[in-house]
Length: 200
Image (cartoon, rainbow, N blue to C red; front, side, top):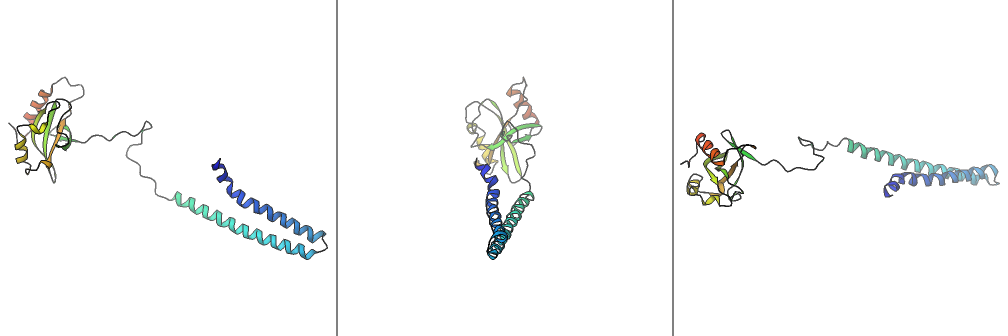
């Protein structure tokens, strides 16, 4: 309802005064033609025409301002559109980060302090964060619900990463979706094809 009122507000704002001015003009014309006091009729007609010109000027200003406002919105820069359109089903979470070790894709890397346990048994890689990226320093097999930092190789990680635990990062191997191989198979395969400092 309020939207309809706002839509017709200009017609109300200008229409009502226009009807009043028109009635005022008719009254002056009537006095000019049929009254014994034609001067009063002339005065009424002049006033009505003056009011009409004022109303017309206000109306033109209103139209001009409305046009400029619409033109401003038309020439605004278009909103930034992402590379992919927004799904009608909703906004999906961003893809998780990943890093390659040779030809093998690992999720992450994340700070070791934040991913110190694994939800399942899986192959992990330990990285040392550098200014230009990450250096792999170890591979291992994470046991479910056990702290990865309890590994016997932890001191080796620190010694080869500026002795700064904050620079230790971890990634987990993404096994093929329908693979029938065990995590031990992938660990042995990746280890044989990868060079890293804390290799045993």
